[in-house]
Length: 347
Image 1: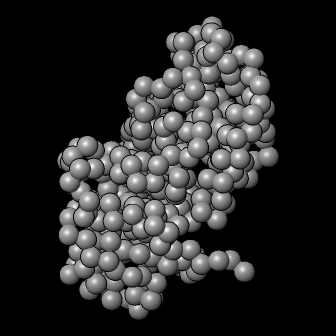
Image 2: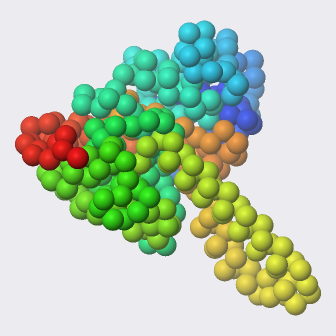
């Protein structure tokens, strides 16, 4: 029998919150009927929204929060002055054991700063990383870091690789995930010192992964590897470039299909295939970036998403909790610390 899970929700985070949040909970409950939600936010706004639907009302408890962290607040300022915010109280609920994980569509920097301060990092992890799914020609992969750490050393990259490998093995169900380091070329001599040192360390790592070596930007969409490891600066640029390219492609396709009567008729006949294509590239299907390396489950939803996208982020959080992701990460890191690594520190 599956144990019930309680999720803590920053109900005021996101461009369209709290309406989008409550709508997302309603959608998620269709498949997450054994999940309870602890909502933090302005109760004068939240309670009427929740009470509109008895199905949602029965699964939710509303806790009042006086303040809201805005998208314009800097991480440090939010950490100092946001102790009574919906975001901070939602994170506190995970820390004190009331909830198994937190989901927020709010300010990414503030969420990372608060979550790291309250939940701390797992043993053996210096810095948490933002990870998310990427659609590929072969299915999907996971990429990290996507913006939490602009500058990373070799040890950070190795830790990211371990966390990504654990995720791919336990969540994606891959027995021996392939891992690649994103670089300016696939040749072994390419790249700066940090990726070179990480390359050497990952070559001899004693974990159930297959280290592919260096990969390039075009390998991301090809699905050359299951886990793409990079620093937050490069990862965030790659993510935004991919999102922009997908939007541009969809715009061009729509313009072409509506350019003439013949193309419109063709689009009519191709409607089932086009619908499938649109769903495959729908960013809402991949919504829910994970903060890996924290001593608690924390999922960041895109701030501009709708109810469907937020529902997907909720499902991601529940999946991470039920797969016991953090426990496996701790086991693998302990195993890595105990194993000799002759190449560690050698360029």
